[in-house]
Amino acid sequence: MLAKTVLSLGLWLQFAVGQNTPERGPQPPISNSEGDLLFLLDSSGSVSYYEFSRVKEFMWDLVQPFTFGPKDVQTSIIHISTMPTMEFPFNRYLSSGTLQQAIRDTQQLMGDTNTGKALSYAKELFFSDEAGARPDVPKVLVWVTDGFSTDDISEPMQLLKDMGVTVFIVSTGRGNYLELSAAASQPPEKHLHFVDVDDLPIITKELRDAILDVIRANRLHAGDITSSSFRLMWPKLLSQETGYYTLEYAPIDDLAMKRTKQVSGAHTSLTLSNLAPETTYEVVLIPESNVHYFSPQTTRVTTLAEEISPAQVLISESGPHSFHVSWAPMLDSVIGYQILYGPLPGNSVKLLEVDDKHNSTVVENLAPNTTYLVTVTAIYKSGKEKSLSAKACTQEEGSKVRHLRFEDMGPNALKASWDSADGKVLGYRVRCRRQTGPSSVISVSPQIHSVLLTDLASGTTNKVCVKPMYKNQPGKGLCRMVYMQPATEAQAYKHRQRP
Image (cartoon, rainbow, N blue to C red; front, side, top):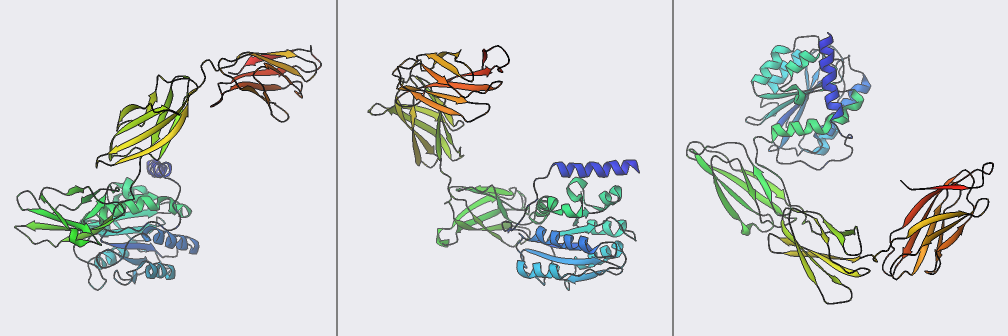
C-alpha cells in the first residue's frame, strides 16, 4: 500500500511542478487534425453535482480549439452508470458552438460505476458506422474518473488498446495507481494524470498536446512556421522502393503561382522556404505509389508577419573613448550586420562588421565628450537590408568627481566638499537621499565645490552623491554614506563609502 501511495504522489508532484499557470479564455484554433475522440464520463452516484459540472467545463476547455467536421475531429460522450449510455454520436455536432451547448446540456445519470460495461460499449462505438465513427482515423479515449469502479476494467480496456485506441486517464479521486497506470496507454507519465477536480485546468494544455500528437500522426500538417518558411510533416505511407511524393503549394489568392516539389518515398517531411510573409498557402501532398493508391492530403498554412531586425538599438557602458552597442531581435534570416558610426556634426564614417551569431559589439578609439550617430544594418539572406540608427555620447575624460568629504556644521547639518572634475564642467549636481525626510538635489556652478546639507536627523544614515555635468551627458558620480551621531553622543559624524 505504501509503495502505491508513493508512486501516485510522485506522479502528481511531477506534473504539479512542471506545469504553468492554467490557461484561460479562448485558445487559438487548431486545424490539420483528424480523429475520433470519445469521452468516458463518470456519471454515477459516486460523483457530486459540483464535480460533474467541473468535469464538463474541463471537457469543453480541452476540445474548444479543435476544428470539427467529417475530415477533422469528431467527439462523442459515453456515460458511466449502471448501464452505459451514449450522450450523442461522433458525427452529430460538427461546429464548436453546437458541441459546446451539447456538453453544457449533458445531465448526470447517477447509478452504479460500471466502468467495465462502459468500456465494452466504447469498443463497439469506436468502430460503428451508426455511431458516426470513421475507419482509418486515430481513435482516442479520455476517461475522467473519481478512481472507483464496481466491475473489472482490465480486459475491456486491453481490448480497446489492442484495437489501436490511445487511452488517456484523468483521476480526480484516490484511484489505484498501479491499476490505472496499467489501464492507460504507455508511458503513464504522458497518459495518466492525478489531479483535484478544482485543478483540472492545470493539465488542459498538456493533455491537449498529447492528444494532438496522436490525431496529427496520420495527417499532413505544418510546424516551425516563420515569416518565410514552414516545415511540412506527414505519415510514412511509402518507402524508397514503392514510390515518391509530389508536393504542390500556392497562395490561396493566386493559385496560378503553384510550385511543385518531389521527394523520395523515404521522406516524411520537407521545409518550404522563400515564402511571402502573412500569406496563406494551400498545400497538397500526392503519394505516387506503384503498389497502392493513396488519397492526396491537403492543408492550409499561414506564414507569420515579417520580423524586422534591428527593431531596437541600445547604447550602454559609455566611456571617454568607447561605448557598447547592442540590438534586437536576432533572426535566422539575417546573415550579418554592419555598424556605421561617425561624429556629429561631420562626414567621417567608419564601419564594423558583425556576424549573425552576435547582436552586440564595442565601438572603440573614439573622441571624448563627443556625440556619435550609430547605424546598425541587418543583411538578410534575400539580399534585403534593414537599418536603425541611434545617438551615442562619449564621456569627458577624467569626468569623475574625486575626494568627497564631509565637515560637521552643527546639529543636523554637514558641509559636503569635493575636488573638481576634469574637462569642461558646466556644473555639479549634489543629491542627498535622507533616511528620514525628503531627498534633495542641489545644482551649483563649476566654480563651487561644496554645499551645505541640512535637516539630517541624528542617528540616521544618509546617501550623498556628487556628479559633474557636461554638455552632452553627466559624468560619473561619486557617492558616500554619512552617519549622523545621536545628539547625546559626541557631536561628530562618521562616513563610509558605499559598498
